Amino acid sequence: MKILLTGGTGFIGSHTAVALLERGFEVILLDNFSNSSPDAADRVREITGRDLLCIKTDLLDADGVGLAFSQNPGIDAVMHFAGFKAVGESVSEPLAYYHNNIAGTLNLIEIMNKNGVKKLIFSSSATVYRADNPVPYFEDYPLGATNPYGWSKVMIEQILRDVCAANPEWSMALLRYFNPIGAHESGMIGEAPNGIPNNLMPYITKVAAGELPVIHIFGDDYDTPDGTGVRDYIHVMDLAEGHILAMNYIRERKGAWSFNLGTGKGYSVKELIAAFEKVCGKELPKQTDARRAGDLPAAYANTALAKKELGFAARYGIEKMCEDSWRWQITGACRK
Ligand code: WQD
Image (spheres, rainbow, N blue to C red):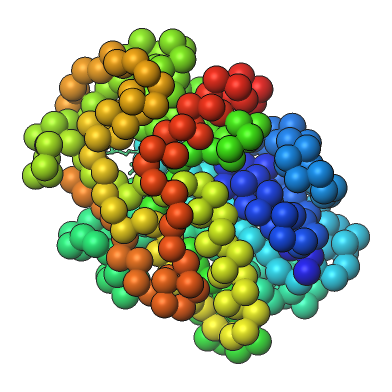
């Protein structure tokens, strides 16, 4: 099978490309490199010993995307990772987020339709769940967001469900990621955010590497066991595996299907830092600051549906996530 990955040189896309190539899929990466580097494609080739095509274009360039499909006939399915994803940035630049994420997706769906490609895996997020939902989150819980990034995911999910309802020949999986961390065990690919990381794990690894002075703990007065935020961290290679299983699932059925991709277990900020300190062998400088606007006390997945329908269960625990994140920081992260 030939699979096109939008945002394919990004964090989740590049790791999923490794998993696909290792299972014999043919892979095409499509990316505008706005938050990644074409070097990631070379490292995916090196890790797998397999070749792949990497096309530089932007989903907002309908002609460019159209060419990618017309010049590569026989694409069986698309995994759609491309999109802006920084929550804070989305609050200050809502139009850029809605235009990039939603218009880009509309272009993609229209071009897929024109080329008869009607299998899609969409990179959704746990951010789609309303903030007042109890944890753990079930897939049928009410959706809603507190920022334009999250709303763009809610809106795109709705668009995709409506496309499937109107066109029964489509098959889609909407995968709601919890908190992806870790890296491929080679240390050659990993999370490489531009500038100062927004997310906790890349911030921790940069403090451990001496690139940043101190870890800022955003609040220790939440109603959680140790007062700090609790999240469902999932190894990025487990997330990649979930995409393979979802691909197999939608090959067998039509319609739009939503699944949580998480471990079902929550770790607090302090627990993650402690796990990382054990792995890197040193105590890290940390300070407690005020809560970050928009943060929830706790968010973690109910994993029963993905287990029952996809046969998905996360394999890796928090220690391996920390080990692989640390190896990436000390061996690979210096290369963007
Ligand atoms: C985790 C915990 C913070 C940074 C975001 C997006 C979500 C998804 C994953 C794309 C929270 C605390 C963080 C720091 C801290 N991305 N924290 N100091 O906010 O759960 O989810 O990334 O889909 O959509 O919303 O992840 O890593 O930013 O925060 O104390 O420097 O760590 O308060 O409790 P989050 P995060």
